[in-house]
Image 1 (tube, one colour):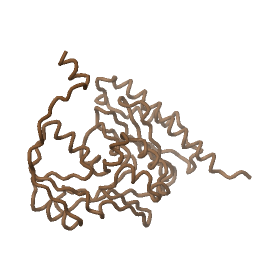
Image 2: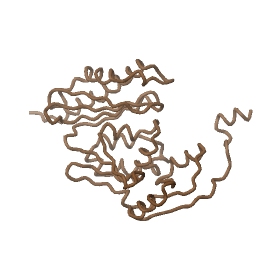
Image 3: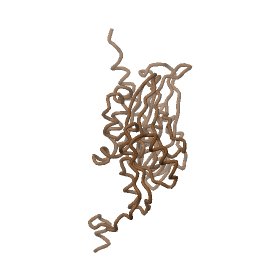
Length: 276
């Protein structure tokens, strides 16, 4: 009976207290980088939602550098076609920020759909990326957007994520088939003409796979969703299989999800076309 209760979550598996640890709470990015360099063994956290999970999994914290008071890490700005998002921006604040919603509406909408309410107000974009957990969705979103990351001199402190919005024509995200398949997709104007498509397909149990394609024509209305979806899905390797489905099944799901996103892009291109 006790084993059944534990498995159902009716009883806590552990009531042991967290061991004492040293806590540092810098208020500026300069202070934070100095602490990170001085204490290479320290754990770095902001919202701490992932930290709690790691402690439950057995990780022992001896020294914690909390980034909650570093306002510089919660800044969002855009200039010269570059969107910069601080690593300590929470899921709620980032997805609702007017700069993000204006720069990449599809990204803001996708960001607003991930995580539970509790996590959305505490979890951060940086923590989601640095945790390196396959079930976390932000790496898929940023991966499809080709985001780049800025770190401190030690390479341990993520400061912000940068997304080039130049030429970005469309962004969409499909998570309706989680945990087996999720897909983020961006469409950009190609430098030499046409449209470049970059997608990242993942699941809760496998890291994301980057898929690319090129489409002739410079208009979203000219996209061929079915053909492009097949081209992208066929790039998934056999290693994408997991206990939720075979590689062929994952390819099928990715093809379906990709087709949905691309059809939405085509429809958006039609709606934006002024009537004569």
